[in-house]
Image 1 (cartoon, helix red, strand yellow):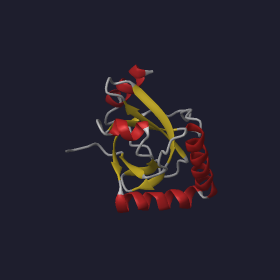
Image 2 (cartoon, one colour; image 1 turned 90 degrees about the vertical axis):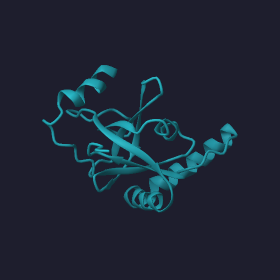
Image 3 (cartoon, one colour; image 1 turned 180 degrees about the horizontal axis):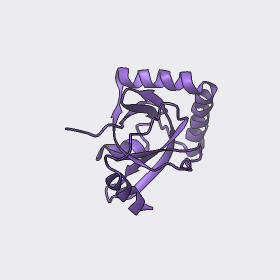
Image 4 (tube, rainbow, N blue to C red; image 1 turned 60 degrees about the vertical axis):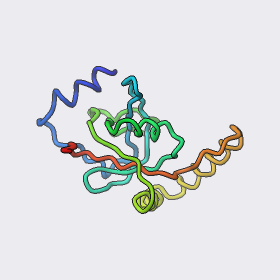
Length: 151
């Protein structure tokens, strides 16, 4: 699995147009641990210029891994994280945001997913009680840029 993630973008560089994630309901978002191990998570997404955004918790593994590398892989998937047929992971960069950018993404997610956002917030609260923790819900957003980073 790791070899396909590593070799696909270089093998196809310049031959494939970036995927259009604007119509996707779920995206498999893969971050990398410090040792290079990929960790894939399905996320809701909302289109943004040049990519897409989603919300997360500041205590999530995604947010922690993005603190040390902005390199990610993205791929259309279903709600359980199974990649869509005939798709391959695509290289991208991502950054965690707060403030107005985060609020804009949150509003777009609520508009797109409606009642499901209320349900997941409720379930997060139940999980916090059961686990005796206070993990914030959707207090950060992630902006994923599909265009190559030229910096």
